[in-house]
Length: 460
Image (tube, rainbow, N blue to C red; front, top):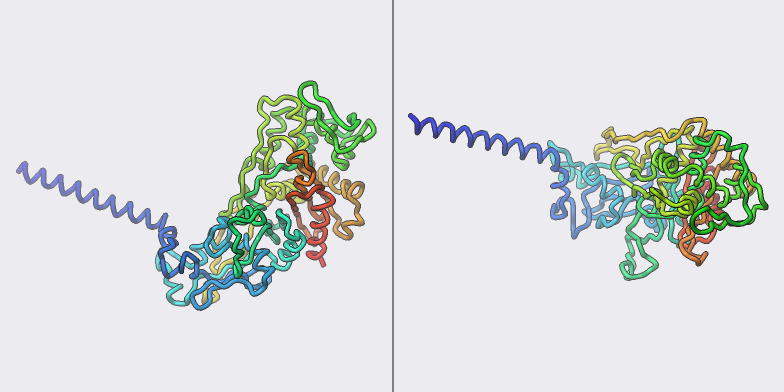
């Protein structure tokens, strides 16, 4: 009897282990089935390491950016489009990790838990994808960069739809350069500079300092600061200004003229806790997520126990802060949209090969960045920047609100990072933008004209 009891217990244990194994495999299959299906040894999806089983990728105007023909991946028939959308679409071998072919590979191939990749066997390719980007605007942005390293991003700040996301250098997937891996001209070619680059923000960060000041210094608009070409903090090294502003300067003019002396003093008065809190509220130190799946560089901001000179340098955008351009794009989008930064999106929809829309819901991450009152005040100051400093005539018809930045990397001004960011205050054309040019000298002189050229095409 005892032997039968022991055998019964043993069988119960075996049965329990068997059931647990089935449950584990089932959960693993549900959770990771798409990852297993997307392995490069799956010949239904890959050939020589290149994805071939995906559906067609279209831009917002239904122009083909990539498709599968005769078991091969074929890209746009326009050379400039292949270059300008490379970092959006992705390369054939998925070296560009943020490309939609890599991030949404299982959706593009039509994988689902019930039928696997049956659609590829049936139709020869998976689901089609329509993007929010306009390839013609991307082409204009790529041409405007003119071979210089940098990036251009444009988003509809009401909807969050990304219209343009260009990164340079790029290359033609139909004619891969022999020196792609070795030439300095292609340094960082697999990096989407809009999302993943680590840049010193320069004077564009003065928007963050200004927002913090508006929220924490009640009499900020009645105050003035002294500028004679430099400011010497009580402790640390002298902070040089971009010009001698002739003595007293007010808050509005300090932002318009990008006065380092004034903004260093403001940052020191605000202190590390308030600056850190505002930077965090505006998303510096957090990822920007696009279409619920594509993540940016988080950013770096830290002034803990900083001396006065480092606080001052941080307040003018020359400290240890590092951000991705899309983070700044999100900040100016929030300003333009009354303080609320809508979730960014690059995927419009998916459809199967029978033409049926799949209605795939992608996560959103809407966030409140600042109060409507603060947004309204900083918007007015950015508009004043263009009217009084950059020149409205240079941006004719755009009703532009903007801030330039010239981030110094070393003593050689030719190594500067040129920034220009802002938005159009226009209900019919609610677009925010960011332009960054490496080795660009001056933000307003180098990045500003690029922004104007692209925006003029966008609204024409």
